[in-house]
Length: 120
Image (tube, rainbow, N blue to C red; front, side):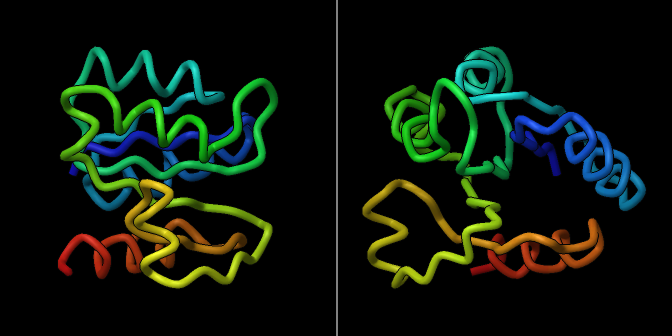
């Protein structure tokens, strides 16, 4: 799977990039919403894992802008947040995401959850 991992914390980006790569995935990273949008304009991803709380542009705003791009309608987007949001599947989809996962998760747990979401 070709994954874009978006988080403003560089240590988390590297941890999850290396962890997901161990399981055979190609992982690109972005440090914020604008960088994620640029990445999506230049490459087709199977999944985007998006943090919510980032400076300059929230994860929800980045999701909305990515969905407006031609390829953005096809990519799976999973919100990965420490906020422990409780939203219904309809509320998640209305905001443009395909699922929400709560931090902290190990890269293996993240991958397991992402794989379950991708198969639905």
